[in-house]
Image (cartoon, rainbow, N blue to C red; front, side, top):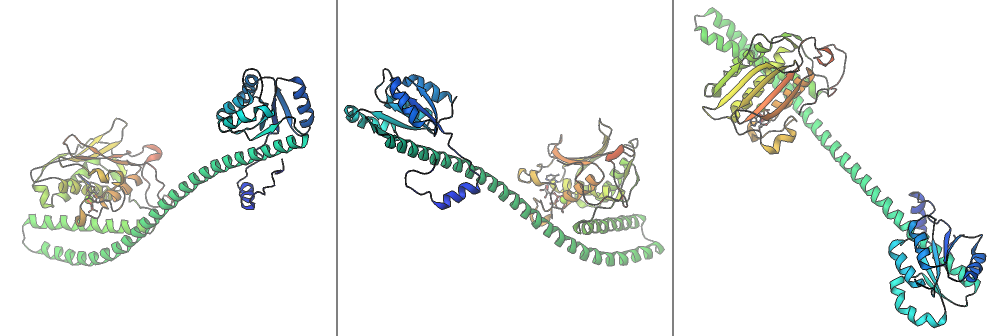
Length: 430
Ligand SMILES: Nc1ncnc2c1ncn2[C@@H]1O[C@H](COP(=O)(O)OP(=O)(O)OP(=O)(O)O)[C@@H](O)[C@H]1O
Ligand SMILES: [Mg+2]
């Protein structure tokens, strides 16, 4: 249908319609409604060839055809005077039930006045007066077709634009989260540089302390003091390792594990021995369960000990003097080894729960960096395990680490030289 109304379509709309791929909207179907068979035949002869003509002899019949949607339809041409439903009544009904179709009413001069009041109700596209001239009818129908085409195009454009908006919104969300990741990587790399600096200085301190330790061996000092210094030094060693790990990770490398056979009970003992040096430890009731009969792990002893030390330190910091902390190793029904640290503190703040294991998630203000649980997750996942936080039986936070035991198929730990690059994200932690 070429625009026959003399109104040129805005070229911008034409371009938009083409770009968005709005296909043809007209079906070429027309419905003639008249109770006079002769009238129907004359109109049909005039229109056939240009339109696919359907016909009905009453308003009710026409309504049934149009609403059922059985035939494709663009325009309905109805005689006003029919027994039963009038042409205007029919169009008023179609206005709500087939709003995408345009209606034309053909009426005798005598009906014109009564029609005036019905115009609004029916919203007919046009009224044609009897007797009609073929060119008038053809032009009216052509223009009604254009009107329908435009209305349908607008409908489709609105639909398409709404979908585009959704797509745009989706892209925007993705962009935002990529930005956050970039920012996060930037911070991690800053942290890596910081870690290198600290490690360097700490190594110098350690050399001095080791020398002092050597001197002490020669002197007659209390055994307690020597042991205390020894433990302190091994913790500094552990710290150096952690800093090294942090630096490696910040460079985008993998966390390398120094694998060996590790007894889970020993992990708990080591971590508790280190944590004992914390003053707060002596002011808590710490319940330790470290059975000796658990299946051994193929693991990095130093890194897993550090995980437990981090969890215990968090528990000590979350509890008051006289508070309770539990540290235990056990076995899960599935055969994995479980390490648990729980306390009777206030539990993890709700605002942190979502990103507890992300870097820089700290509820301690200046007192915490928010790296402890993040490092714990990296280490545990690298061992093919999981770490999760829940509310424990003591009333406070409960951190659970599940680790596959040695020789437990594909999900085990991968150490240095296993050839695989990158953190593959296996074993999601909650
Ligand atoms: N046992 C716990 N009870 C209550 N809240 C905890 C517990 N453990 C961790 N949290 C919360 O989770 C946050 C993150 O812990 P995480 O160990 O990662 O960082 P941090 O302790 O703040 O700093 P650091 O890097 O020194 O460990 C803590 O700041 C604290 O708010
Ligand atoms: Mg911590």
